[in-house]
Figure 1 (cartoon, one colour):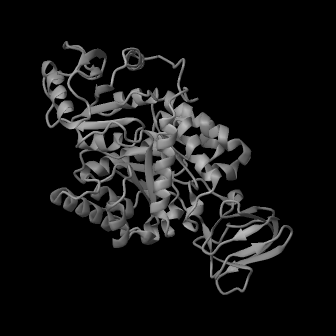
Figure 2 (tube, helix red, strand yellow):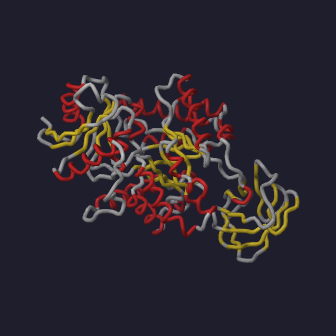
Figure 3 (cartoon, helix red, strand yellow):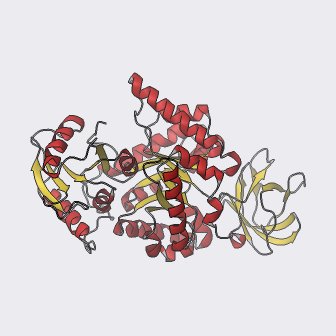
Length: 487
């Protein structure tokens, strides 16, 4: 693995729904530079996902053996247990304009209603006065009458309804139950091995802990070296209000802004997003920002100015990664969307004249790791170190360093390829794997040689080196840092 000095610090996650995973999609992934793949589980097409993972691994192995020009290591896989929409519009041949105050009907397929929908759970889907969001609010309807599978509604917000659009009814939504995901579909994926598991919006820390134990046990039974990191979807007021407690039992969060906007005033979402990112940084947890990023590029080759600004603000706010909307994968401009996302991130990160607003001027220092990491970060800035290099077995030291969003590159040296894959989604972190765990006295010389061989660093460069103490008292946590010069 060769490290580069000027790579993107904010990472990119490319999203796909399971129904679009095929041979052509695997070939497309092989040629793109992304930091992780998010596969959204749809139980109706779940059998495609294990096969797709096998295709990717096989493809990247071929590139590795033949010296291909594409990225030679397979990006980490993120499985998203997203609930998905409970209903979607079908049979619409072309976009349809709906005006404010217009009366419309909603019915099942063949009902000749204004909008025919497919749903896996008609019972309880609608109720009188409930708001219906088409495409997360492109058009908003209010139910005026409900009789069986024929709904009368009034248009509250007019606009364009596109074919195959999902619809959402927050008033009748039920909270997900993680026990429902203890399924053959998940077992099949755990047997293949993946890196992150995105949980649906669950408000109970006890329920998450129980599910975490289940996933760890299943992963072990399938011979996996480690269980996937747990990422919680923040998609409701309840999760937002209990976030500090929930962060104690997960490895990170995915901010689903479009779902949050259905449960609170949409005008609040920008500031709440900033707050959630900061709280994750305070807890040294991974934070991913999602929802409709470059969504218009499903149909248009050029993004809107607002979409580009959306990416830029997420980078400035300090997110670890931005998630390209899964809707983009359904269109023909996915490659162009990735280019726009890369260029936007690179432009924002190149503007180093002023401190961005996510820099922690007075961070909380409550533990030994906090103290060591923050002191190392400040020292790196003062001595103009080229990089901060840390020994990290489980990834915690690298996460803590990254939480300060230091402008100095962080190189995580670990003994586990699984840990390295997970850290590749953490902002500003790159990494190396040591094949063996050397004795304490031999760590620095071994790391020195690997950095000179496999990174952009050169002899004479100054680094901050974080490791365990040179005594028998501190083998389990990084609690020593020194200023070193590579030789």
